[in-house]
Image 1 (spheres, one colour):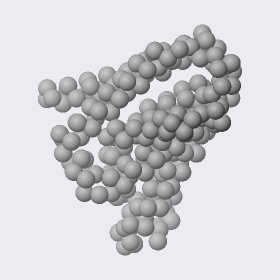
Image 2 (cartoon, rainbow, N blue to C red):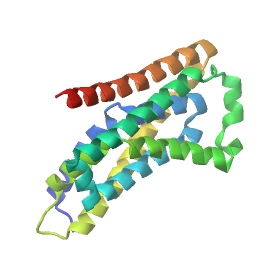
Image 3 (cartoon, one colour):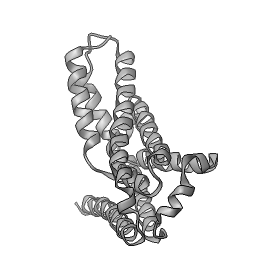
Length: 217
């Protein structure tokens, strides 16, 4: 069902890609510091779920259309940038976090709606990332053995990528949550919120800048 050599290369490439800091990692870190890993796990699940959806889209003709259509690609890129602006402004406006408040924000106290919102935030971030589609469109074919059945290989790689995202982000979240007491003082929390918000806005500005360059070219 799988070419072991190709799958091993896929696993290494995926792990390196996921471990590279980006918007998803940033969201995991800020959520873990603010709420703790047990609550931030819903953000991580949303992020991992988003990758599965994007992998499924990328495996269809729609994924190829988006990858080859400048208009569709730019539209999704713009939506992704706008969502990062929203996340950045949200962090800037967030109240300084206190450790006392953390005790009230454990998963056991979180409502189903709150968990759903966290999950949706992670998923939306991935769903508005056109680079993820490009990643899957360009990555999957390199590790597909054309002498074997296509669908089982794609399914295994998609599930593998989901698990890779989940485990690596949990690792980031565990590290962040263990420094939570040190980092979640009101003063430190304000700095973290501002740095995180600034980084999201920086990423969004880079996307908009690239879009302007492409329009002017």
